[in-house]
Figure 1 (cartoon, rainbow, N blue to C red):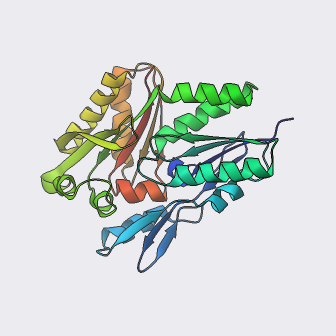
Figure 2: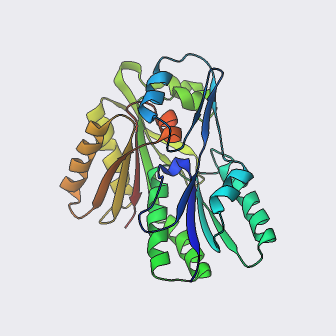
Figure 3: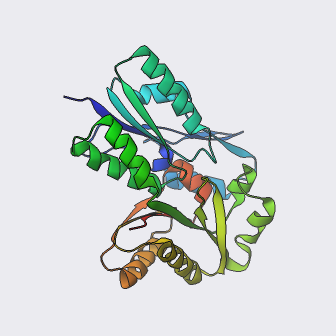
Length: 278
């Protein structure tokens, strides 16, 4: 029997899978005063509240190759999903770990998947990997099919603050200053290169949610899956579910909470939405 494992960094917001061996490699949020490790022990709500009052510098740190090797364990086949290489070194570390793992164990294989995204789009990729593994497809078939599937998924987001993105050089300070002023929210998407691309500046939550829905429909949302993840904003997430079902009743939608890394960047009130373009 094939010993197969799915692993992902903690930007996937997943700690375990019900039917599949899984491990999460935690990212870290680092300040002068403290360090937040994005693992099962992290109190995400407390972290978000702490950062609301924090005025100092902060940064994030991706898993190193040793962290990834620990996550791989002793699996014969590993499917490793990382946050976009456009925003993090996590994918590069995972590829170094892959080379080390396969060199030490020539009969084992690791497929590293650069999501070119974050959060709930990784959830979609992992769900599809589970399906392919259950179908008992070969390593080569799964690797090929998941690469094709990625082209059928997307990520959109709405953020009330871009303070932490700007602090880490992920967006320009000029764009960051717009968010939160007079209730302005930034709506955007993950680009094909895995960077963040603002698409709308909306005043008020209702207009922002409408812009999210329009972006998904324009990208090709028809009858597939939508995975909504929020940072302390379940009310907006549930409202978006209603809006999606009003336009596309057949869409499979779920709502979950962002964990540490994604909550740090999305900040309080933020929504990340992964969806299939089917």
